[in-house]
Image 1 (cartoon, rainbow, N blue to C red):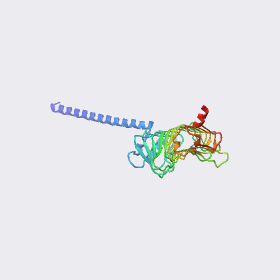
Image 2: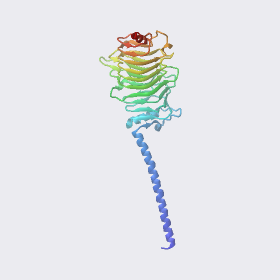
Image 3: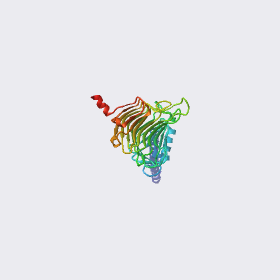
Length: 339
């Protein structure tokens, strides 16, 4: 082989080596990118669905309702189970959301859901949950429920439904709407043993409403019983807690417990607690009731109440008891008992 042939052969070998190096490097980079994409997809599948991936954008003024609902639907259908709204963002909602069975809607601590319009904001189904974040009402036409549980879901002790660490606030001066509504409206409907923890509700016509309607059919029942409200703060509501039912069956709201309760009275407050049903318990502090006229009953045990208990700092002048065997503490009675 002559010198020229050797040079040509050597050049060919170098070219081939260079090609193979570039090809393999490109393949490796492509595989690395694909591997990262697969890992990302696996994380999403195993852990949560990000609403931003479905078109929601918490940094503009556009309606995010459809995108958030699409993320919830995907989480439900794929059994992922969690939907995340991340970051210090504000998502705009102009139509109601349904948190479907088995889905947890989780906010970042300072993520906001801004409700624009008049509609039921969030309907929570069995085994669904909401945690963290802030829900704001900014439309003074709003006169509906912010978070709603319907007794047709038949919530019971072994279900995983819970609402925790959520702030619900009406930023308008309308004082309309209901922050949290539990409603058993027909025979066979019930909501029982659901936990509501670390909630803050402000600026509504009604802060928390528990309601059971009388069934039309004979020997049928509806009830909202045995639910726990732990560390509940209510501020500047016209009526802070409203329990609406008969004293017992066929429609009752009984055995519900409110512990660590803090109620801040304002000039807009007409009633702190209205109680029907049996064996409901309230333990907490009612602030600045002196703002209201003396002898005004800001806590009322109605005719349809029995064996309910209130442990608070409220004086007896502010409590009206029309029911049977209800019990409440007062500073006056405590002072007399110590003498």
